[in-house]
Length: 119
View (spheres, rainbow, N blue to C red):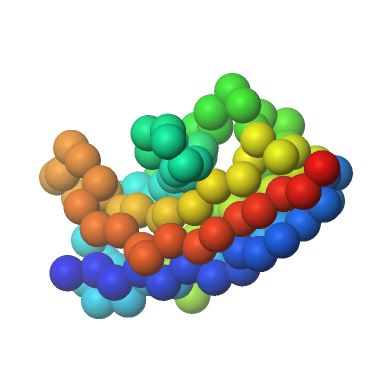
């Protein structure tokens, strides 16, 4: 198993910044990809950004391109999401997830962290 713990959420004003962290523990040697998702009230969970653990291949949703940056620190088994130019539409619970080697889906999830952007 892999345990994921998110931190860094909170309240920001529109145009401001927040940085989320997701620390992994357990079978971290089997991690293939980590991603950040978000879920706003009444909406489905959506993928915001992802990064492969070895090659660092990155994906961004169109809605966050140019504003959010995903990165990883293999030494700390941690993935980050730097969020700049925040908009009220970014308000959601943010979750990190991990895809294990050989898997085709996200296998484990963190507990989520609330991000609220005021206008």
